[in-house]
Length: 391
Image (cartoon, rainbow, N blue to C red; front, side, top):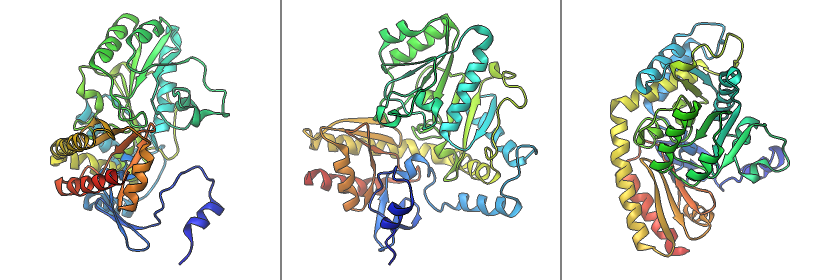
């Protein structure tokens, strides 16, 4: 059999720390490698495969749309783009949609929208928070404090302040009349499945009323029902002006979006922003399929299965008190804070035919397909227990 590992190393830039699995196929929430071994997937393409692999609704959408056309350009009116935008507005309460190919592109576009909004108001500073992850492009990196992603690749954008997450004193000190926006994830993924406190969100709302800035919710990982609500910010008494989303919305195809409230209509004029592939017809078709599945009972199932997973993880915490320090997260976005490098457990899980990954060093991150059931949870917990015993 061809040595795909060696071939990858010889041909592709070495930027990924890959798991030792050469994939042959995937179905539901399971991945099969070329040796025929089957892995229970609790990573879901890093929260992308909302409906798992090979879901009938996704396959049907692909077949029907590909028979019509794959891609035109944004010079044309396309029914599938418009129908998805209508559904997004209906499900979220936002007023305008701009399509992108990815989360980082959504955040880049949002920065441009914020800066354009603030231009005549003398507002050009953007505040973001430690532990956040907003993408790999320059605007996104400028809002992040992760040296490993940034070292040697500056300079980054001016006018960006990165302050400590959940630090109310620093927040109050940092906001000024020049603040155009505050950007945050309402459940950090790369940051270790960390959530803002209610008091922190209340302070952002209070300062917004006083200084008149925008709030951008980065829902790229926590959105599309993952936390048991459509967006993570819905667990708080707040309403952002802008939301960026991607990952799960495409159901496995590259799709992202910027959602804006009515107060941002007219800020961009024709030609000020655009994209060749954004709003690709095939991706919009699978996006619409994902939203319809969420409306058809999947959202309730996420809450139910998420609560079950949480209880099982709490049992694990009680059983392994010296190894498991905290259970984090909401819905089907969960984290276990460990007393050691989470990469050790990730490797053990792979050896035992299960997939998850590490976030923020010591957090085991679980973002499985939203279609998992209690039997899948029980299987994963049994494997995790074995791995913790082996450490």
